[in-house]
Image (tube, rainbow, N blue to C red):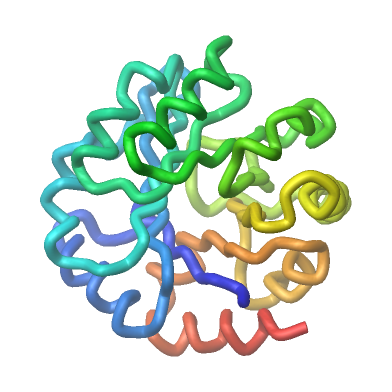
Length: 218
C-alpha cells in the first residue's frame, strides 16, 4: 500500500499542531520532518524540541530526514524526541554502517537517502540493513522545486535492488511530487510519497490528500 508523508517544512509554523492534525485526520500515515543544518544543504530547519513538542499530538509515524553533516551526532536526540524512522544521507558521513546500526539499537528504523547525482548501485551493499531508502528527486534544501524526470528511472533501478536484497524495505521519494506525477513515481516503484507544498499550500489539504491517494492506484 502506498503511504502519504506530508512534509512538515511546508506547513504553517505558526500553527504546526493544527496542520499536523489536519493531515492526520485526512489519513496520512507518515509525517516527514526535514532537519537541515545550513551546511549539508543551504538552509536550516527543525530541531529536536519541535519533534518532542509535536509527538504527544500525533499518532502518525514520525519520519525524520536528517540533511545534516555527521548525523551520528544527533540521531539519539531525535529518537528520544519521538522519531520512528531516521533517515541519514549517504553523502553526509563516513560512518554510514555504524550509524545505521546505532539507529536500530536506539529503537528507530534506519533509512538512507541519496541525492540526485548519487546512483542507487552505490548503496546496494547497505540495503539489507535498511527499513527504507529515500530517493531525492530534487536537490535537497528547499521546497517547491520541480521534479527531476530522471528520478523515475532511478526509482525503478532502486526498486529492483530492493527486490533482490530486502523486499521488505520501503522506497520513499521526495521532491516535486504532486497529484499529477504521483502515479508515475508509484509505477516506478515508490511506495512512500513525500509532498510538501502540494499538500500544505493547497486550498483544501484533506481533498488534496484524497487526490494523492486516488492517483497512487496503479
